[in-house]
Image 1 (cartoon, one colour):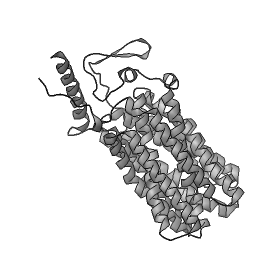
Image 2 (cartoon, helix red, strand yellow):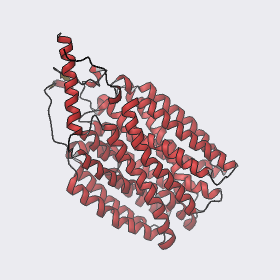
Image 3 (cartoon, one colour):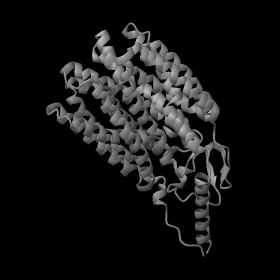
Image 4 (tube, one colour):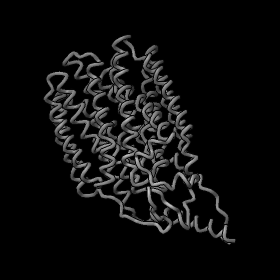
Length: 452
């Protein structure tokens, strides 16, 4: 009888978590909305580089590897900032961190408009603007959502990451129109005015940490250990693993951390190489720059729905299966580009936009959820930031390598084959890390017997 009572208590504990997150009003959904808008603007700066890239090549005549080097530096600096941004959100809350990011964004974008030589752009965009995006973009916002949500975490992360897709959809074509009408320098100045003036007031008015709550089941012991007394979370499969109060030092000693540190950077290696060079690729094939920017917009709009879909689906069928479906979409998108380079049919770019948009959505939305499955807790921001530091190395390497190989062979096709191989390795390592062995997703909750 006591066994069944204990299971019933476990079920009731889970129900209390669900009621807390899905009641009549949860301020966490306001945070989701603010993070959605913030990411649309901050990452709009990131992905609009693909159209500034073409404008810079036309004005200064730089080689592609030299020009894209500024973007690679941007990704590296953004990634170096990531662990600090996550830890600062853990310690000081999101408001101060994102305000600091908006300040750097305004300054960096203004200085970008004054670029006269390559090293100017490396400093203004590659360093100052990167710091701004690092402190106002993905890491702090993903950390906030992890703090506010548990049962609906996949959905919440999917929604905020879809803001990045909106940024691609809206910002990239809009910036291209601005470049055509007023030039790339004035386009940077307009972005420098509007983006910080939207992000900063929202951060001041709405962003905050969730209220601190304690559960009767948790009693903290020395050296970061937690003993579970009474009721247990029914989603947890590995009680010993989940009971730890993780620190960065503890996390980096695990095999799972290093498997993720290979898989996540390979995902960034793929997406940044393709997203950075996609406009240049289509222009090389004879497309108009504006048409190419619309294809980028398709990638963005598809990724909006894709991120919400993958986040929600991962809560139902599991992280590994969802990630595999997303990676398959990425591979299909790259195969379309290979075919297009041989047979430039006017319909193929649209198929690329759909497939790669869905694949990119998976590699963007799922990493913070998977990391939280392993390392949920007070130090999550720092741990996820450390993973994103390595992620940035992958993204920077992919963007630079694509430009370097194009300079050497005059084609992006070898890049696409390399990226397909990387996609397969990234997917394999998610399965090897096996978040399914640590905790169930809500859709695979353990079946509990009826009360007795």
